[in-house]
Length: 214
Image (cartoon, rainbow, N blue to C red; front, side, top):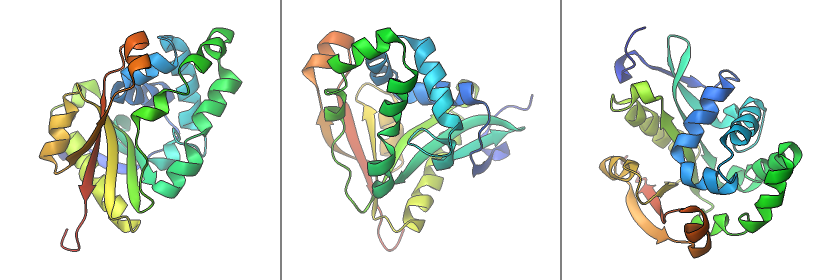
């Protein structure tokens, strides 16, 4: 197999393929939050998120993602959309958890579902929100994340957005990557209950403002 590098990666609209790999890539972007939400039941997370990736709508759907493809396989994904879609699509994940979750998950959700949203500040109406950006483990450090993020900037500007927002765990090394790519730290949020119960670290809201010259 040819090594995955930015030079041999093709970006395209994501398709409903490789759902388990897509779910694993999504997990890697926010494992602390997913472990809290699913009470560390990774198998249930994988089953539900794989299902959501294959759907034709919703915040976890391939419809909203750009795929980095290497020899016909996913090498990375960048999933995001303008704020109005964020507001309407995000609730689909919780609905699916209620529909597909185990009895244990359904018993657990009320204890954390009301706390997790406090990690994520409101997204401005004129902003584009990057929900997930992740490269395949074998492709990390080879420029694929940068290629996906630059494409997100163009997608955001094409949608008429004046900025791109994202949230990332404060202890995630990706913070330095985003800063290098021109994003600024806007706020840092800690939610004590889930920090204590599940070790969820503070999260940083980062933003990239677009000017008429960029």
